[in-house]
Length: 174
Image (cartoon, rainbow, N blue to C red):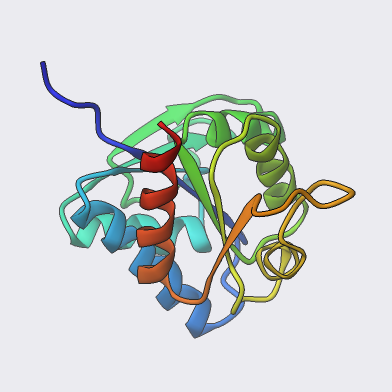
C-alpha cells in the first residue's frame, strides 16, 4: 500500500504586491513539488499562480479549487488539476480543509477566511512574516484566536523555510 502524499495549501493575494512576494510564492511551489507533496490553492492569479508556476517548473502536481468554471480567463494555465466549484468565496473552506496544512503569503479578507478555517480545524499554519497582508499580521500575533493560543501559527521568512516548517508541522501532527 502506498503512502498518501501531503497536500499543502497556499493562500494569499490574488494580485502580486511585489517581486519579493512572487519569488517567495514561486519558491514555495517548487519546494512543495520537490518534496513530493501536492499543492492546493484557489487556482487563480497572484500568489496562487506564482506557486503553481513553481510546481509546474519542478514537474509537480497542483490542484486549483476554482471559484468559477475551469474555462474562466482568471484560471492559472499552470494548474495540473482544475476543480470547478462555481462557489466564488464559498470555495475558501474547501481550499483549507483539503490541505493537510496551509502557508499564507500576504493576503486580504479571502486569505483571512481561509486562515480561519484552517485554525478552526487545527490545521498547521505557516505565515510568511516578510510579506505585507494577513500573513505578516497573523505571524506577528502568533494566533488567530483571542486570547491568542500559544504556538498556533508558525512564522517563516522565506519560501524554503515555509515548506520545511509546514511539512514538519504536518508530519508531527499525525
